[in-house]
Length: 463
Image (cartoon, rainbow, N blue to C red; front, side, top):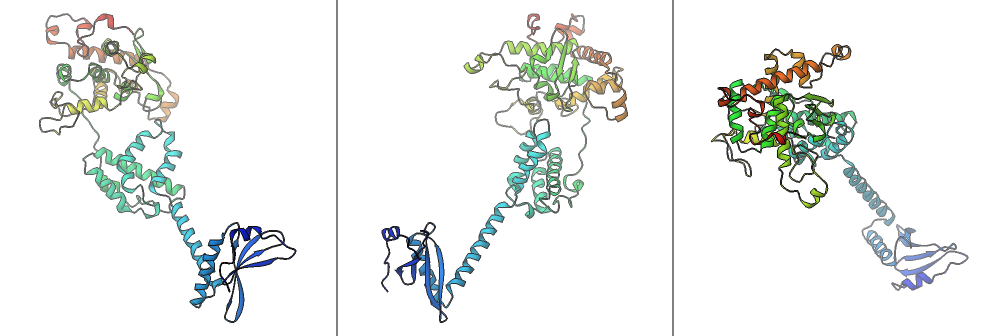
């Protein structure tokens, strides 16, 4: 039989007839033309003494060249002693099984996929939308196990990930990362993405140890020393003022650095910490002592002396933030002051960090390393030492009342008591930070006792 009798033109011109008919291409390949006009391919062959037909596909799906290749594969099957129909069915089944396997593989959730679902459903409800958790997980967890399918994650993978963090010597971070990882995998079990939690068999105390709560409180002598060290530390004046604000108000350093000018009332001597900036999501009004007010005035004076802004920033007007970032697109990073004070306590043997202060002993105090958050603890301690009731000091720190009954029934807001507590604290700080010459017969006017604002003048003390 002659081969390749058909051409694309012959196929296109093959018109339907009253009955279906076949057009031969050769070696068992035929084009079937049906009365309705549809066309499809047939391979006609003999196997085991019987005449058989194998459908290859419609003309729309299978072109002439492909039909010839499929017919050749069928002839090869016959040459191997295989029935093309059974051989093709087996190949189709194998291809389908492979397709399903690939599809199932594609549908397997990875740890990174799980994190995104967890973030979408759980972390989004957090005050920052889960931004800090995302940063931590993307830095320390996902690079190591993010690409792994969930069902492949074992206890050893979690342990190895945590060990990498612990090797950096960041004990508190180890606890936080492990807790977040456990929360994520428990979410997976709750959502039926996993049958068992790979962190369940890990004993937290064995893996990450116990975290000793910090008890660092600056002594009054250290506060006096700090008043002498800060102006010579190389820190920006507004950041020095932030240190004193943390001590004079008991506020968190992040709350201070995220403050906006609309929340600072210089005439009423108050500072509002809005719910979005407070840790517990509750608004908190701080009544400013003369000492604390002077720190805000120092920050304002620095803002007024700021260099000219870039054209686009200038067009937008003055920055609304008390501590704007360099691009003036938002507040400065809340870790700024923490990093700057830590850099200046590394000591002569401390590790030098590129782009950071080289004055590594400028803020070292006798009692050891201190952090901005220790100033908050120091403020509360000083208040109670000055006779402030612990309950009032706790409210000054904007702590949530743990006793549910008290929280429900005792509705006194303690504003007068809190105002007096902040006044007493500010007055004591005035005494501790007053220059020695002022302490021995010099003027005791408040403006002369402000260590955080050595260059400020009275005219800068307005909003």
